[in-house]
Image (cartoon, rainbow, N blue to C red):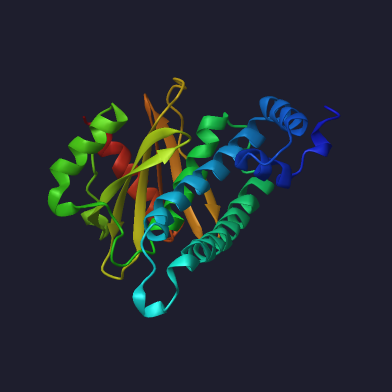
Length: 257
């Protein structure tokens, strides 16, 4: 076993991603990440959280202080600090949930890019599926525009499968980022307000097709697979049987085109 491994903690990986390590320690952690697929995937997950937080909160933090709050202009920076403290609290909750998945051996001997599909899809689902007013960036009424836009950004044909026979209607979708590459999310909802999300991203390296894999975390579960140049993950809080049926319907529809 590499003697360096026990010396690198989860806090070290957080600090590495945030750029807060001294040069010597940075080099040690970087060497460790180069030797561990699991640790690299974990670091990639933290970067995804950081990017999601910036996407969600930067527009709010850049807004002027609302007049009714009665905060003097020279205290605007304190207002920004308060907002970021709230964002950090959210990040801590999400990181804790994801850490549980990594900690229980969720990689299961898989290649890092396959294993990270579920974690990336999970993070996107946790961030966007609870949204009431803005769950999607482009709604289903503009489906053709949405599909064309996402296909162009991913540089691969992307489609929104139909899941109406299972009681789920397309709400729309959005552009995301996954480990520095464009990714897409389609969101579906049933009459009870339950949501499924389909996460799609390009593969950095051609990994070949993979069989369906199942994973779960904190009540959210789903199936993920690689088909050619794209990786897919369909997840939600529905039961495993329904998600399995939905994932197979997604696969069947995409395989026809």
